[in-house]
Amino acid sequence: MHNINNANHLGEFPGLQWTRKDSEELVVLYLNDYYRTLDEYYLREALQIAKDDGVDFDKVMRKVRFQLS
Image 1 (cartoon, one colour):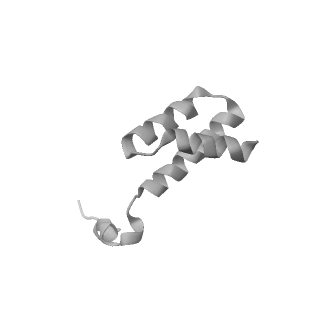
Image 2 (tube, rainbow, N blue to C red):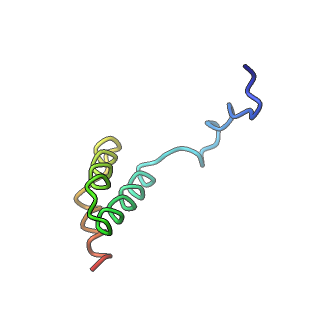
Image 3 (cartoon, rainbow, N blue to C red):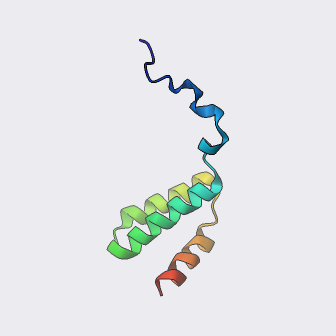
């Protein structure tokens, strides 16, 4: 099978590297969704991302709660 999109080069660009800041922003999005819906799915996802990517969950949670108040 031939790669018609030629996506092999995507890893070469530094702008496409996932960073801890990206993970932190994703945790913020999930926490915002959690506080809006109170659906524990969003809280579990935020916790898992924080755990996997080394994000300080307590710090991010305080930041989100402060923004919502």
